Figure 1 (tube, rainbow, N blue to C red):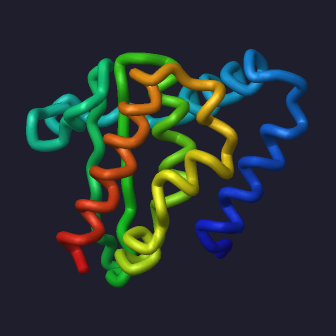
Figure 2 (figure 1 turned 90 degrees about the vertical axis):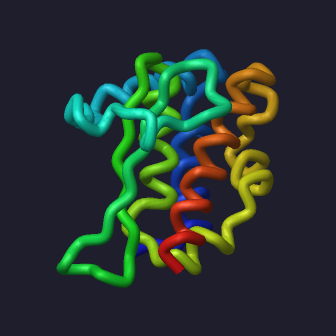
Figure 3 (figure 1 turned 120 degrees about the vertical axis):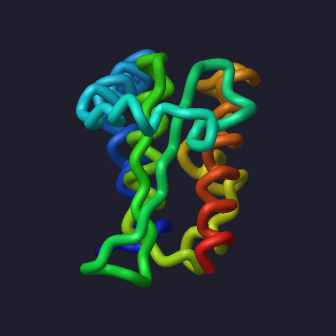
Length: 141
């Protein structure tokens, strides 16, 4: 399994193959379409991510076959945000709490080149999701 840094590099490489941010955004939206929807019961206040303009729900869990790792699932009512969730799951799901906690959200954001591609509101939402993932990791550590 790759590290978070390697996963960031893989995503950055995928983005580099696309000629402009319009195509990259389309790619992110396409990633979101592949997410399995959360059951209705998990789209609740406890799983809702605050700080996002769209409705966003994130669920963390441990699995018996990998008890030292956290796995995440998520959903949003917005297509682009679903894609952002898919990117974050690629980076942070199936990792140890220590790996997740050690990631610098601002550095992730910068390395993926998202600063110039997202509005301030979208950037704030993405940071809110990353902060929620790290809070879940701190609680599990």
